[in-house]
Length: 148
Image (cartoon, rainbow, N blue to C red):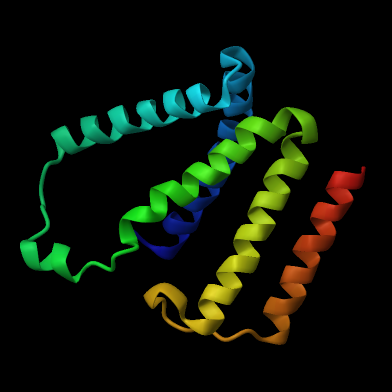
């Protein structure tokens, strides 16, 4: 996949994430219980993943691949579940703009720290004035969206 296609795919994924947050809020409202709504949401994701795996079962990891995997690698789904759960509970109260704006801004701030310190085995990309200004603009933009 070339760089343009990669960014286009990420852009579409980001738009779908915003729509998904609204859908999850409606699911939570209908189900009344946020834990049940979260379970339903993730069961559908599980069924989709299993269906795709059934269509494309290879390649599979080797024993060496699994033993070299960091202990924390499988926990990524749980971190995503926290964001989904927050959206289920708060999107109706805060609105889609502020909810997704804060989520994305927090994601960027954490990502800048991960890049700067090379955390979780990521290649290091040091903070610089442009990245810092970008982060400040994100915070300012979300503050404006939330206020107005």
